Structures are given as structure tokens and as C-alpha cells.
Length: 470
Image 1 (cartoon, rainbow, N blue to C red):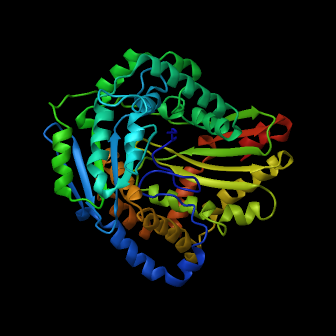
Image 2: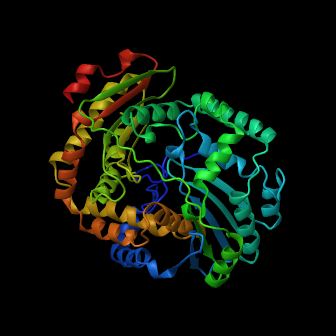
Image 3: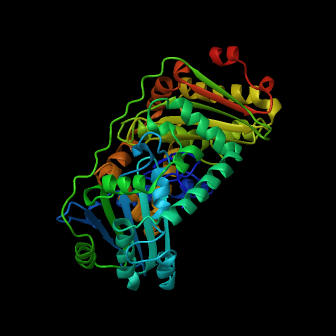
């Protein structure tokens, strides 16, 4: 039950949402041999709104079901429209702590009994928290679907927040925070987002701080449950070997009661960035690290598919530009790019690890690849490879009931539009080299960059003059 930093990434890191992961390292030969077949298959994969049946219960909770008779398992997910961005000031980490406490006892199940009940039926239960959502999910044999649904319903509707267990779990989370502080990559990523989002809650860590977590009380937990865990702010998603009618009937019996209003999410806007922001971390860590981040639009922005393609062009596999031009030459150990596109405006990040003595040259190398995107048209072949990498990942992500449910839940909870995949796919197919150049020029503007470095000695890092000249 680990927190995740975001609902959606696109690039070489894992993500949640419709464009999935770009970590597909063996597709070049497949794409070259079967590009047309892949495009035809993708059209079918994206146009699937009719396969998902939806019903809104009298209390406002939406139930979404996709019947997949070929699967002998079922994925049951409950999505809650509450994450770290919704936490009260000074209570950072309450959403993640809440996720932990859900499994620490309800009116029906004692401590540890929820997991034992699921495992006794051969299932697996877990959860995760992001900036915008908390998701509870069970994968279980289709015949045991009623057990899974009943357990999840009891967990999210009737937690008891045992005071003793709350104190124990706070210590567990605080220890998790301390472990993260020993991980240079986590420390660096946290600092990057904190500097890029100075106002918006996206700049906060999902897990919280030792001080904020230690100050969370049982009353805070009860209040958070009352404000956010209401039927109108939850989605039930079920995919697998079940009948939709059975799911709707069972959900109607388990999720009853009047429709409470709950709390509405507060709007937050990050002010426009007008000057370059720089941070430097001096840690005795090898390898050294660097990253550049630029403000971009949100999930619905028409430029999002273009940015996903830029990320794929830069780091979408062994033959992409950063590995070929920087890693293969020994300039960096690793390099990545991703578009972080949540429901509010996000961030495009390019980063690398390298030997400390190569930090300056690595920085210049990354800048050169950005400039190349701005000035040189991408070839049709290279753009098509990047496009097919994204498309292929979408298809592969739908091979499991968990992947399908995650896709449905994310779109329903955060966009309210299960047809959005089709719009995204259509725009993805229309992107050409001019779009890549125009968006690169608009996004990769020096005055809007957040630039960070991590190494044992500041002398190894590019100086301010080098950064401003970029």
C-alpha cells in the first residue's frame, strides 16, 4: 500500500491512466513488421465505451461493469475522489494514512481479518493513494466476487479507526517517510515538484511529513471520512467473469443510505512561472542527478498527445534519443522524459543520472536534444515508432482485468468521460513533425524551467551562468 505521486505519467516511468506505461523495450521489430495490424487492433481497443455498462445508484454512487467472460477472475475496485491535494493544512498525509487504516478494522472485521478473509478465498487485496484519488482493489476468482464486494463495501463505509491501531500505523508511515529520506531519487523528485509547484498541492508529498502525520488524530480521520467517503464521490468498477446485473444488484444492497453531499474539492491554480528556478542538493550519493521541468497543460489539453509523443521520442525505448545520444556514448548512466498530466496543469520532466564529473556535459547534452526537437523535423519513421510504442502499451495494459478496471476508474473518476480514450487516439494519430516542433518551442522555454541538480559538491554542477545561458 504505497503512495503514488500521480494518477498519470507518460514516459519511462510507471503511470496510471489512459496512456499507460512506455516501458516497452522489445517492440521495434514488432512495430516494423506489423504496424498496420497494430493500428487496426488499437482502434478496437480504444473504441470500447459500449462494452462498459454503467448505473448510478439512488444514493449517487456510480457502478461501472465490464463483462469479460474469457477471464475466470474478477477485479473489484473502489475509487474515491480524494487524495493528497484534498488534505487540510497541517494534516498532510491523512489521505495515505486513511488508506492504511481502512484495513485495520471495521464494524464487522477485526484487525487483520479483512486480509485473511480475502486470502482465504484465494484473492489479493491492496490499495494506493495519489494526489487526486485513493483506490482500493481486490483481484479474486470470479466465483468469489460477492465476498470481495462485501469486504470492500464494509471497509470504505464502516471503518472504526481504533485509536491504538491508529498510533501504530502512524509510526509505520513515519518510518516509511524516513526510509524515503534515505533514497536520493525520492528526495530529488520531491524537491523538483516542490519547486515547480510552489502554490498548488501537487508540490506536496503524498505520504506527508513526520510532523504532519504524527499530528493526525482519530477525529481528523473521522472528519476526512465524513467529508470525502460519500457515495457521490466514489466509483465502483468491476471487470471480469461476472454478469453486470449481478453486480448492480449486489451493489444496490451493499451501498445503501441517503445521498450525503460531502465536500467539494477546492480549486487551486499555480501562478505562471516567469523566471528560471534552480535548486541544488548536496548529498554524498553516486550517481549524480539532474532534471529540467516545464509547466504544461492538464489531461484534457489538446497538446497532451503531442507531449506524450515527445516523451516517447526522447526516452521511449533503447532506440530513442536520450539513450542513443547520451547513454550509449557514456555521457549518462540513464535518462528519461515524461509528461505528468493530471486534472490540473502538470509538468514535463527530463532527467538523467551520471557520474558527478560529467554533470556539466550531461546538462549540455540534454539541452542539445531539446533544441534538436525545436529546430529539426522528426522523420516520419521515428515519429511512427514513438506513436506505435504508446499505442502498443495501451493494448498490453488491457490484457489484465486490473488494467482494464484501472483505465475505466481513472476516466470515470477524473474525467467523467469513458470516450476520452478515443479522442486521445484520434489526436495522437494526427500529430506530425510540425506539431512536435511547435509544442517543443512553446514548452521548452528557459524562463519557465525548474532546474535541479544532486551531487556531493556544488562545484560539479552547472553554475548559474551556464543555466541562464541555456
